[in-house]
Image (cartoon, rainbow, N blue to C red):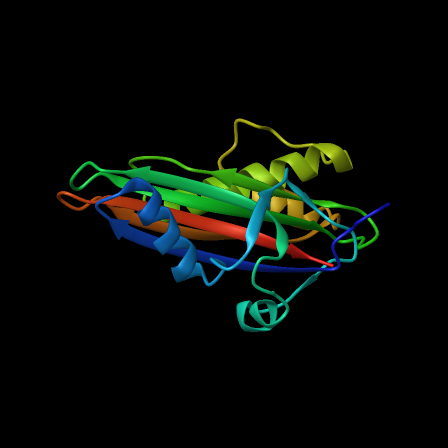
Length: 181
């Protein structure tokens, strides 16, 4: 049996609660995917996979459904501790080839920093599989230009959720790529 997803949607959420597990549940609710039995998978963006909106994706979910997702997740119970959860995406120009999804879950990075890092990870993984020559010591902006000018990478982006810990509560952030048949 072969299951290759044909649709993907991206979602994110944050949850706060005195209990760790409950903060995760609230983050899932915020992301609108709490009704699924999530199975985390590694980071391949399937060939010919169509990105759909969260609203479209939610309509395709059934309570209790086994649902595959690439998930970045982070939690803290430390007051004012900055954290993030990011999914980076890199899609090849040739839609018959696979792309990459990356997960990044740092402390001390804001949404922009974490998102750019995750996007860089995904694009660099894709660039190496496509044989694009680049200097890994160059900063992301320079490499992004090289990747896209090569004509082999058509798009890269990220979805990121960040938050700061609150006093007396667990805070959990998630970002997910939800893969659908």
